[in-house]
Amino acid sequence: MAESATSGAPTPVIELRNASKTFGEVRALSGVNFKVNPAEIVGLLGDNGSGKSTLVKLVMGYYAPDASGEIWFHGEREDNWSVAKARSLGIETVYQERALCEKQPIWRNMFMGRELRNRVGLLDVPRMRAECTRLMSEHMGFTSTAVHPNNIVATMSGGEKQGVAITRALFFEAELIILDEPTIGLDPNQIRSVRELIKELGRTHTVLISTHLLHEAELTCNRMIILREGKILAQGTPDELQHTMSKSAQVIAEIAAPMSELRRCWEETPEVALFDISAADGDYFRCALTPRDGQELRPLVFAFAKERGWKLRELTRRRHSLEDIYVRLTRPPEEEEEELD
Image (tube, rainbow, N blue to C red; front, side, top):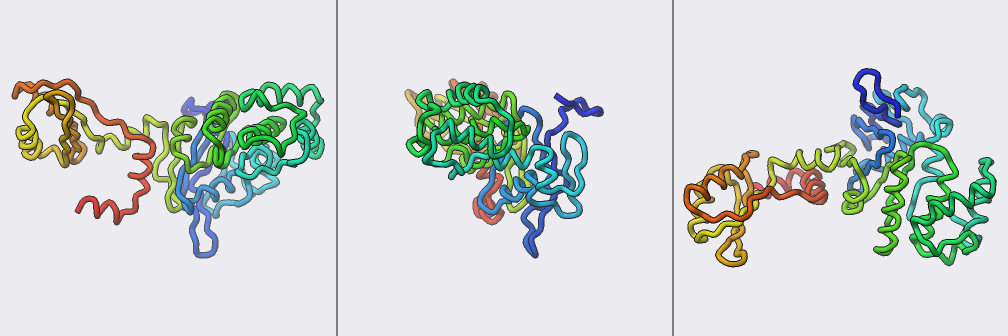
């Protein structure tokens, strides 16, 4: 794995620096700094119109960034970025042949094995039949044991067709695999199979997934990038995104004490912005406490319990789901103001 000479960090496979893209008066991307490192599975998340497709097309070479932006490949700046340039570096081929789309350009009435071999032949990629069979055996196994080279594509399930598309992609030796909504339209078992296949690919390939399915991104990706209105709102590992939300994370405390006493305590504690008290089992109440201005409430709650003789059996900080983080970051400013009111 290549490393930066200055920091020791891995050199990104692809990187966009201060990349913007304007179409007439519409600014689809604004000052985006984006990179994908070797052997990394990155999730690109955002609502419709957030700039995901534009960013992906910049990576593919279909668009060139505005004059202020730069594209780097393996630590070298690439001028005159285009489809032809990206193809020469193996990136356009990634999208054309390795992208996983809802409707795959697969010849439905052909045997799977022949479809794969013919596709390779059309693109003049030198592969022997034995190599084709080996790839199908190794990689299609992650999708379905029922898939066989003599099966007709039209008779396959959605997950099996997704597997055909991925297997076909493995004939091409580009470094970056771009997957667009890889599990859309699949049943739960197919989703699980494709998810495991993506994880397997991520061991030896660099993968970029554009998706609306936050749960799938949370289970599959080791880094996420959240876009809104052409700007990156946040990016990082799941733990790093958790840290961005830690100041607003609720504290959960289960305490055996009279409800009236608990309510009075939280009302009189300035560090607590909001609270909710609900009955738990036995004599315990579950207190959900939202801190004010990023205050750390756990030592305070522990001190109250000790001073007042409360029985305390749980004291934790609630972990945000990726959905919580996404909704909070992408919420329009007017909605945040209404919540405060």
